[in-house]
Length: 152
Image: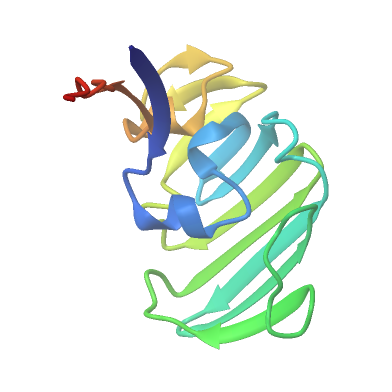
């Protein structure tokens, strides 16, 4: 008898710790470090979340079903190792706005207009993971269950 299991393996650690999976965002408009995108992953897109960091200080808000509690309920702050000087992200239902100055791995430099991406790759209605080459990988594992022969 064989069972097939599946698990999502995140390429970067921020995917697992974030209220928004940036790789799953469909880019609408983007100009270098500012991006507007659609988050169509349901039920993950239901609710609102936000995060902002200035150097090493980060503030998080999250009002989503099933989200873990932050230190003050739906708000929290912490000191982090900075990846950029300024980073902001807000998500309300299926609309996400991102800013990173300068750009980083989580919010890379992109150029798009009306869902037509021009940089780093050309295409229409592309997800951020497709554009940056860092999509979340779905791994299928086959697990074999071997029944032990009963000896009497």
